[in-house]
Length: 119
Image (cartoon, rainbow, N blue to C red; front, side):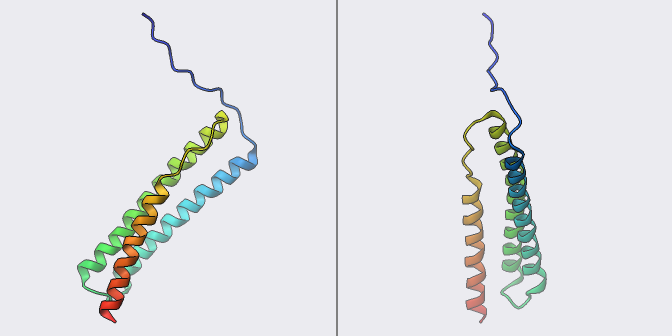
């Protein structure tokens, strides 16, 4: 019994405009990751009057974690889209945006609670 290798669709070079658009989207993911990281550091280091140290640090770490998720998700998404374009397949569904949106909403609610409680 011989094992047949899974057929890999033939790849071709996509239109350079789509490749560059995919790259710009990847760079947007990286800018978002950097912004989240900067916000986490700023929240922890430069807003001492906002709630207890532990809560502020937890929210800052939450933003840092979201930063890592955004950076990794951007890379994975870039590779998936590039592969799909080369193979002429449909673009994959982006699920990570839900994780980022929910995580950022949780941090935002935490900051709002601290603002109301401290104000």
